Length: 90
Length: 542
Image 1 (cartoon, each protein chain N blue to C red):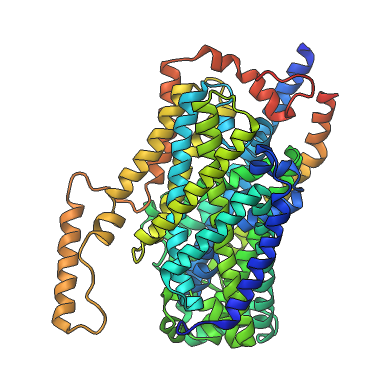
Image 2: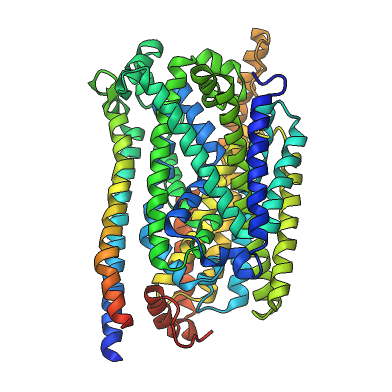
């Protein structure tokens, strides 16, 4: 029992760490974008190619980045995390 | 546009309502217990729930509102779109799985899990109701105005129709009917918007950049650059960002959806699908906004009224004719219905499951009674929604959506996170944190620029007034603003979330540390275990 409690504790800590890191990455990406909008409007107005400014590209990338983080987490959880949970339930 | 009755739209809307009434009849026969009513018998798959979550979240404000904002301002619409999406990964990482494993019907189940039931449930029900009611006001007033514009129906009649149809879904079909209404609506909305985006892009060689370039040619390069429409000051931007990001993770009707799936893995998968649908939808809306800007023109969008809200429907008419216009109008109506139904169900959960069953009846109420009280609560909320919609007619309620997200982020999110992740969190820490989050947000919004200057201050002169009248009104507005901002009690931010959310965390932490609660600390081991493993298969210690 003590052994499984320790493993549970370790797994909880690991999930918590990953969750925090991914949340912080999302926060950085989003706030990076918002703070540029607030403080450096000219930079975001930079034209990359006809019809595309840096601002539009970065805004779309924030959405794509949210997708990527989501898939990274779901990939980890469905493969690694669920296996360990199944063993703990065992 | 906006004059006369829109026959095609009414036919499509009638088809939608008839079909969903059929679904409700089917669902009603399956709604036998409280678990069916609140949680659809835990029978929804992750994929279906992902669509339903998207349906709950993609309100008329995000479809018509963002398309209009983009059509009139270009780039700035993207700021809202990103803000409204980034809350979803946070729900996935921090909330969805523990919530599903620890709770039964409402997110309060999780907050109260190892704490004293009555005080926590009472506080949390107040936080839930504050969110549900402010959001309902925003939705009902928006729906009355929009339906007037889209269908040519009278405002009061529109609000009553929304109330009646929505109540029928919730009252008879509970969560099963509400979920399927959300799924159908999400498919129609995503499908309709995608078809429109494809038609728009086909006119620009399927390259969005050609569309953006054309928009810049017509309206100037500024439409591709950040303006001042959404983000004014840096602190306002940071505060609004917090509200959007963490408010999503504190919306009771969204959190309630995680109980409709069989387990934590399905909850996880449902957020993944929701994030994909909602993100895609916002990208498509951005295309539609620019499409309307180029193919319809800003003058015509403004002339249609509704402050840009008609951009997407008129675009549908211009690119695909009256029938498609009717279809898109009907989809917008369906969108409002579905969101309001979800909110009503969440409010009914707080009133009946949290307040009646757990506070008044001490956690023990027969199944039959639970179902009766749940249905009664839905009726009370439905009637309140209609009354609020009529009372707030003609008021500017745009700030209500920001208020909703701010309360959700300040009252619900901190208590939820601390109860799951912090061992030493206590009953009174939770109560004080939730109460502070709810009332400080309401107070600071009241003392802030939105209410004191925009709503209570003198208004600009109506268009077409004589120049001296316009000048006099401007001077009065400036004098009022200067007077108010110099008051000691004036709160300078439009969105108080930066203070209220951090304050709510701090108060929860300080109160918990000052007065430790032994039983709550001892209960944490079980919370930790159950948050990972879910309900024990042998015997549950309730």
